[in-house]
Image (cartoon, rainbow, N blue to C red; front, side):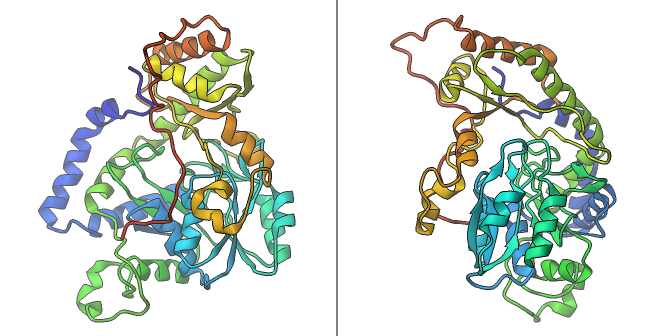
Length: 408
């Protein structure tokens, strides 16, 4: 079996350091938003160059709290890509706004600046591109449109740890951005965790209050002073110190892990290049000076994507489909009135894109096996499926979202 994601070897190597950090949590007796969280916030700030980092309990909450802290009003339009994980748009709804979808640039899978220009309406107040898979949106072009049209620029940089454009880290090209530390992310915890990045001290302070029921004060060390004070209605979105302890340990190997992910992506490209039915392979290399790609996943576009996924599942190879239903066609956004054909580039990617296993624990021998299975399918040399054997579901396939929900 080759799972879509595993970090067993990583944790075995890092366990002594993780154990020490976790032991400090138990010794302190403070398990939520304590010293380990503060240490992580400082370490992530140093790594990204952000002046302020605010740890929260998930990447989704980071988006919601960022939007709220920026003053999103009920009904404000937030321009988001039509192709992304559903939280890019549901966070807008949860914060009280109205998603306004924009088609993507097929070269980056991110918001197309020209499409953004056409999508702005009288109710548009924010624009929030998402950086997906291995590279960032064209932030220079998007920033120019946002400035000219009077839009507040935010970034769904949940996948963006380590990504840079013109020397600036993802999440810091506009007013603020976010990180997700979901376990499979480039820097992943043992459960959910996230953070808001910003250079704006006042914005960071508002997010810090909102994550703790609206109470002012940057840390819970201020608890005696703020125990009975609530400035605005907030939520319980504090980061657990156990997750912060794990992330602090894994942060020491982040650059090494990023380099390993790049090596694996290059191997995939070399082995799959030129195969029939391959529409697109991952771009490798950092691009322009000051840019840095980071391979969160290895995404390929192929004809007969769903059949390939079923074939790989039968071969014991995990995949993830990104994303089988574009955002404008998700049931939870049916009230916006979009139909198939409204955002053709997003719909094309949704029908062809699949992510192959890619994580630091993966070996080159395993990459060879994945590529051999892909080659056998695309060249028609794979063994036929027995009639009595139903196709196994794709591991980790992301499905449609019917309602908008969150964890408090």
